[in-house]
Length: 87
Image 1 (cartoon, rainbow, N blue to C red):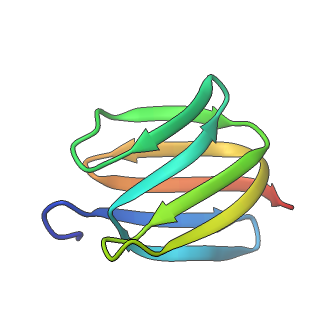
Image 2: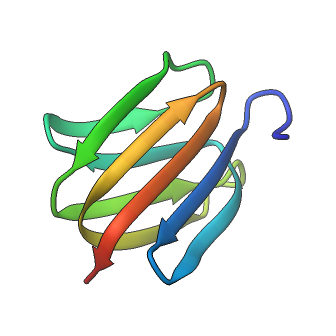
């Protein structure tokens, strides 16, 4: 479980886990527009459009994943991003 002020994040493709760990924030290309997720955000389930998923660590470094589609689920400071394919 993530510590206070952190998110537990998992980014998965059909054949593998792309990234897993804790983060300070995640931004995703939601179908309705870019969405930033921080600890304490209300629960959400949204489709993704083509764009970039960004995971930001507490230290300020970031990981980026170009995606074409998928969905994001956020509940209780846990983020799961399921991508259909990665560019």
